[in-house]
Amino acid sequence: MTLLHAHDYGGDGPQLVLLHGFGRSLVDWSASAARLTDGYRVLGVDLPGHGRSPDVSPWGIPAVVRGITDTLDAHGVAEAVVVGHSLGGLVAVEYARAYPDRARAAVNLDGFWWRREYPGAEKVTEGLLASVGAVVSEGYVERQVAHSARFGVPAGRAEAAARAAARPLPDGTWQTLPERAAALEIVDELHRLGAHGVAAWLDGVDRPLLLVQAGRRLPPAPGMEWFDEFSSRFAREVSDELAALSRTRPMIGVERIDATHPMILEAPEAVATLVAGFVRALPG
Image (cartoon, rainbow, N blue to C red):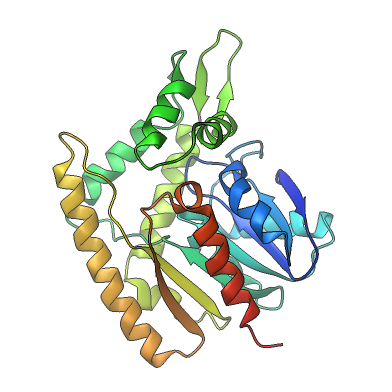
């Protein structure tokens, strides 16, 4: 049994379980959760190797969804709508696939991945892995707050999220999470899930799904023009696949949100409104 760190935000009504993205923690959800407790019981969970959760080895989808199930059992949650952002969005869909009797539905907020051979993918992977499992100097939190300001994230929210997503060390430095070994395994899982495109990935998932894309691209950073081209191209391809899926699979809903990828920090009110509207419309 693997028990993950969780935070019960309270609330009354249908159960929501919130999952965060790669290198992040459940604290990213705090602002949205505060709005969702008006009508829902809300539980946030740190994915394995993130935040305050223990790691699992190997970091694979079967172990991760089992850990989520063990954690929900410990909190008395028999059924839930599982809502995830980025990596958490992919995990939410995989939870619905593995436990259709426990997942009332799943929401994936901009959690889509590409095949390993996708043009530019190797460069993106290198950048992703460079940011995890490292000891970083004092001032890490301040740098994260400054970075988040580019997306309009209030300083207090950004600071709390940055502190929860890394491990403080006694000398004032910080270790970013997950550990590098886990990060390598996570990337392998992401490439496995993205190997054949969105439609093939979702084949066999028979629970209601809400699939959400960011409506705006990340602001360009100096020297990162190549990433803007990469992410724009991939987003267009995903959008085409989602449009086709929504026409042929009535249990799949597709939406865009007026925010960039870190939407749960940038636009928590809009995220909460979208999730609540989807859950209200679920049958039964």
